[in-house]
Length: 324
Image (cartoon, rainbow, N blue to C red; front, side):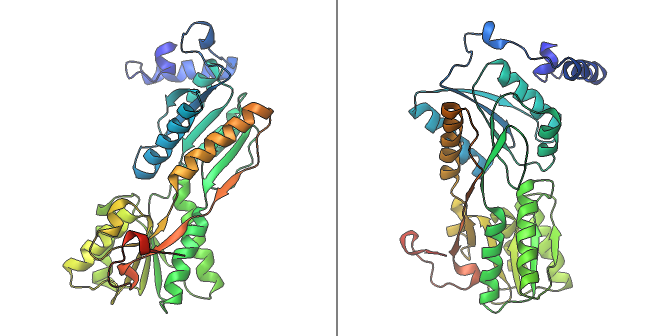
């Protein structure tokens, strides 16, 4: 059973399925606290990482770990397969066995909330997960992805660009779902078309492929990209084809990764305060431990940084970048 619960590749899938079925039927909870020197205490916080540690997630987790350490607490981490929501439930059970008083869940897959609602939790969970989710025992801390898309879309509209396209990332991620919804609702409220397409990924290669298709079939006036990497791929394709950004097409990214300020042209982008997300998650978790009650969900507002890809020239210094 131990090898199954820890995700060992040495276990056959048929055996794994039978063991997991028994775990669910018996509501098995390993009492790890009774047999591990790393058992949780009142100052410990469990963290489930169910996502790849890319730029934003890595920065968020770093702040979570730092905040817990500064408060003198212990950090107990469990990982889960982002593509398998069942493994998220198993990771939560693993931490519950450590008797941690609260768990922070870092996830972005849109099917995770359904699995959490199905299995339930005996330990309060603070989920860093986008969207509105009413699940007993769980509260959320998130950056408002829909607002970010609205800021990006409205920025292009204010520039007089009404033929827009959203190039979404991996639509299985809740972030992508929320960003798409924000873009579409903004377009509809302004009475314009809400065209969109997905790369099914978050990398520059996906943006490049879409960019080449747009060059061949016709360009929009403005693009809201699912993230900065997609935007970089788009701009690479446009540059190769002699398409000028922003004269021929304006591009807005999402995340404001460090390279956004130094690309050519520099990239207008949505800024997410990942450090604030991590700190707030720990504050909410500590509040849940102290009061015995889960606080209300917290929504953190993003901002817009305007740069050359939508018409700002010359490249502003970091201190003079415009936050809207």
